Image 1 (cartoon, rainbow, N blue to C red):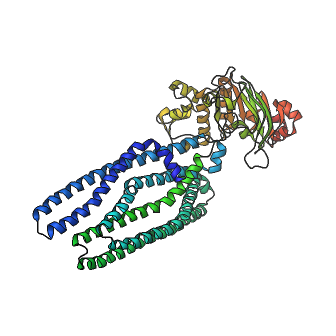
Image 2 (image 1 turned 90 degrees about the horizontal axis):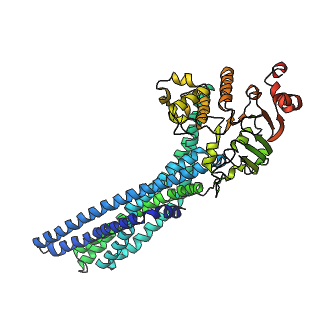
Image 3 (image 1 turned 180 degrees about the horizontal axis):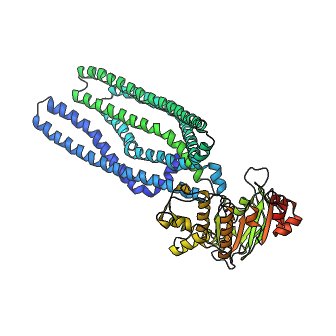
Amino acid sequence: MLIRLLRTYLRPYQRPIALLVLLQFLQTCATLYLPTLNADIIDNGVINGDTGYILSFGALMIGISLAQVVCNIGAVYYGARTAAALGRDVRAAVFDRVQSFSAREVGHFGAPTLITRTTNDVQQIQMLALMTFTLMVSAPIMCVGGIVLALGLDVPLSGVLVAVVPVLGLSVTLIVRRLRPLFRAMQERLDTVNRVLREQITGNRVIRAFVRDEYEQHRFRKANTELTDISLGTGNMLALMFPIVMTVVNLSSIAVVWFGAHRIDSGGMQIGDLTAYLAYLMQIVMAVMMATFMFMMVPRAEVCAERIQDVLQTSSSVVPPVTPVRELRRHGHLEIRGAGFRYPGAEEPVLKAIDLLARPGETTAVIGSTGSGKSTLLGLVPRLFDATDGEVLVDGVDVRTIDPRVLARTVGLVPQKPYLFAGTVATNLRYGNPDATDEELWHALEVAQAKPFVEGLEGGLDAPIAQGGTNVSGGQRQRFAIARTLVQRPEIYLFDDSFSALDYATDAALRAALARETAEATVVIVAQRVATIRDADRIVVLDEGRVVGTGRHHELMADNETYREIVLSQLTEAEAA
């Protein structure tokens, strides 16, 4: 998964990567050449007392060192830019895929893990790429070059390398195998901490209302402790790696000095060669240590890559049409024919054989008990999810074949839980129509019964709105959401229990103003409150996902027992009549 992800998203950066590899190759060759020059100075300059030889070769070493520094700076520069571009592209890909998800896919993953995969997981991949470009590219060159040059200096002494390299490789391999499951568990624990923290921040008022502070503290402490424990276990494994490597390195250095001294004493090796050999040994070991450092990151990056690929390889159940319809001939006709909807793996469908007709200039209401499928039915029209049976037609065309932009302009949905974005009143109202004028915004606010409230805010249309609209009340959020849809001016209005947080006086005034504003449009209202829908031109009664009655208020009161029970649970017999 990791290799596939990197291969896919690094393909556009082949030229910078090639230049980076060239610079790393040059600076590594310079690094490997310096010990040979140093040995030459010792053997031919220092021992013979030739100052001119020392100065000339010393100047050469300075020049090579400067070239090494320049190459290293260039390699790090291109490596950092390429790694940052990789992180940007992967984040964008995950974000675009999540934006294409329907409510079904978002619910399957959950918001906390999607946030973690878009941020922390991508950051791990980016960090691995950066360390690869800056360290790992030069490590094999240095290791192989160091071994070749060490063999060229003294073959018998190189027996130390035969023992050292396999021991280091085996030690690193055993530790890395233990790290992989620990890193997977760590990312899952991080998801849990994010989920608990998100719930506690979002539900802060509920926690305070029920005085559940201690319980929530215990929940967070438990999740935090689990993450800490798995992090400590991972840290303990990582802590073993460097001591093992350094122990092997130090023992090998002792062995080289011991056997090298005997070689010098027997005349088989010069002092400068021993010095160069020790330098090459350290370079080989440093290469192995760099590889070790990378191997510490690889298991976690592999886990993160798998989690990212899970998102990227998940296709949305709402698929854009291949040849979309970009023009609708009629305006505002909505028809649902035999529509059904079933969640994957569910024993029973949420909706069964739903038929509904809504025309321009009419108000169609949908009512039913909790869990009867009202919001699901409304979500089929703007394609929050697609019907698993039957079809949904807008202006005689199946919504699955309509261009998403055309459908978004035609259908305006006011959701059951209105969400406002961080910004201002104006930026939220212009969400569906960026070109709306201030006059259009004020008119929409007036219809939504929010104009007096906004006029009282400091800044008016430029008054700040917090993320989620937490600095305004629930009723004010609903009125802002209604105004936002009015600014969009769609041909079909869908109100999903959008008046539940309003008092009766505001509800009545808002419905009266909406009736005038949407007189030529198609209006579909889902509501729990009978007073909101009793004057509708058509009322559709849902019960356990089925249509059990259609008609006007007085007709259903006479003929439909389900509707009658709902009405009499809210009104007296006289009020209902």
